[in-house]
Image (cartoon, rainbow, N blue to C red):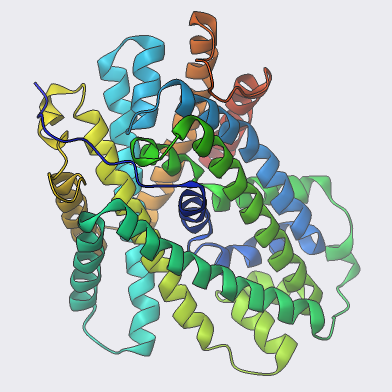
Length: 398
């Protein structure tokens, strides 16, 4: 039997939810991924990011429709439960999402602490524990408060990317070798699949649906707006990068955006380390908030997790889930081989995308879209399942 008591409180509107999605997607990845994408696609890197957005779009549309059909936290689990009628299958999907959230939070926390130690040379364990605890406390205080903090961090990230893009587009241009300027469909396709991982995060948004005002209208708009904003950012930044820096240098650099700014302006880019820390903090906070809601939603129909289906009477947040997720994040950040775990979690997420698109196909066979809910085009679920499956195969084989 699940715990009873007050539920989550609807306090989120369109802009906060959109900024939450942008922050989760942008994260810290673009600060290194642009070099890897340029290494595959050459000067056509902006096209690769646009292709990645096309790959992500059908699944994003599927999530937008499902969030209106079944407006519950632990959205993926609820979708599978409704489509199959099997609690065990829903629990498996929900726990996979929970695992990816905690692993992502731990991986980003570890990376953010690495940047922070370059600015503040303190003990790594102390920084991991203190930062995660502070972010967990912010998540407990209230969804509006935690997402306002996330919005500030997101705007800081976007400003940093805007500065880099502006510098790269106005600084001196380089002449790229013919081999990296030649249009290569195979290279662009491979880069597009790689860049797809920079769009992961829109799926986290549906777990905030029980705290969103007018979710059937706001959630689809926020998901698609976050995807569009992120796509434009990635395209502009990658264009500025290949305009300013030789592709070979970008591909070999672990800090390609620092290189872009320094080559374009002749000045140091120490401020990007501060922005990278902000990006990491945002990523950790977003994953803690999301993962706690997954536990809350799973507790609604999985008896063994019923204790998590409870919101604090004052803060109206899932306190127990937030505490458990925060402690797990700290433990993983201090002990686990996070590169391997992060790779596995990304593949798990692609498997979930396949399942979610197939679930939407089944739900459409079972009935119509509820009145007032968003309805995606008919081709969406089959296309989303196929593209997610191809990305999964590529990820496994490489």
